Image 1 (cartoon, helix red, strand yellow):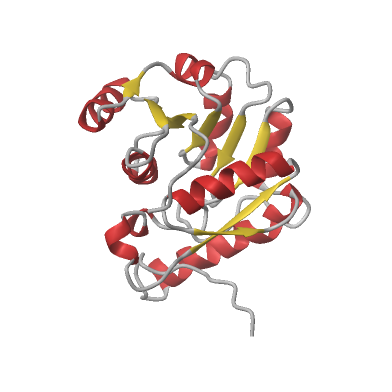
Image 2: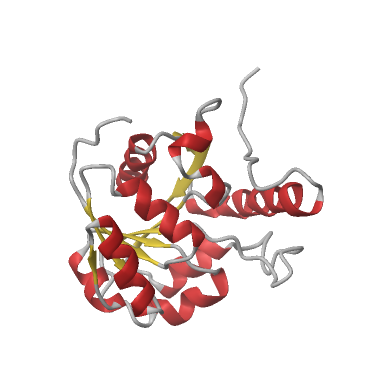
Length: 213
């Protein structure tokens, strides 16, 4: 595990598989984490198990420098309304804007989920990341044979660097994926990964890797 030099307060919004997995990973670093959820009881239980803080969404976001949106894409708009002031906060969007049956993208080509989130939170620094990683691959024990890549896109270079350092600190290889509009390409990769895992028989232990020949 790589040591992260800059200590941050990170709010994780969501207590599903991804939120729980990222919370478990980040609890092993020197960062302080606070957990919030639409289900406050689940947030309190997870935080207690990790020795972390919990709170309502607005309080968690206010106290943090970075916010991880570990939510279904369809829930993001409602949750952002509960976040309060997001000015200069780094928001990591890990969502894939897919239909309820996971078979199609809700949006794409001329926009992306990440860009729509940026429009909803114009004063925040949106970073697309982790949308191609299944929760089953978050534990370090699941990644002993291969270092997995995290594609990171943002219009803010400093935010991209910070998130890259976070990814590196929990054992992933960060890949600079350019500006936020490149989420139009990254999100379909995430959708294809879902198809490989659940519709093409490979299971949720697959992830895309960009290889230089």
